[in-house]
Image 1 (cartoon, rainbow, N blue to C red):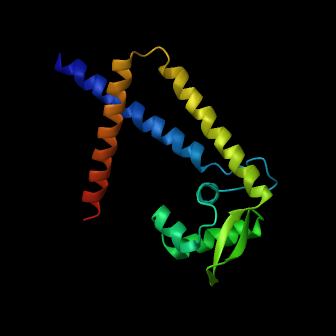
Image 2: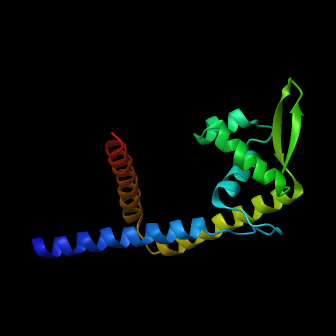
Amino acid sequence: MMNIYNKNKDKISYSLLRLVTKISEMECKVRNYGTDVPLYEAEIHMIKAIKESEGIHVTGLAEQLGVTKGAVSQIIAKLDKKEMIVKDKDASNQSRLVLRLSEKGETAYRHHEKLHGAFEKLVAVVLSESTEEEKAFLLRFISALEKKVDDFEDNRNE
């Protein structure tokens, strides 16, 4: 009995690793998102953050995304060069710029959202034959695994 458990445990572990790798590779692909310029993962996620917090500034983005202002500034410079964003002076603080998406940035955002929607449909199809109990278990499992992975990473950095 123990031998079968270990084989299944290994199958689950390896299957999860393969899935994570595939999703990571999919996320890391450079895509045009309906525009004439390629966008990297960090750039499209910055576009999403700007769209969902229109009028935000660099410091606000850094805080929201948990990265440095320097990192945000570098990506903003790339997005500006690719004509994805518009920088406006902040009406309440003339030394600060607020950000919004250009028309091209809006197009990229919409295409990115479509891609996420398609992925959500894919997951829904896979789950469509599952019971509510199976779905609840899967959610608990994924949440617990995510927490354990966070703890694992935190402990590796000490």
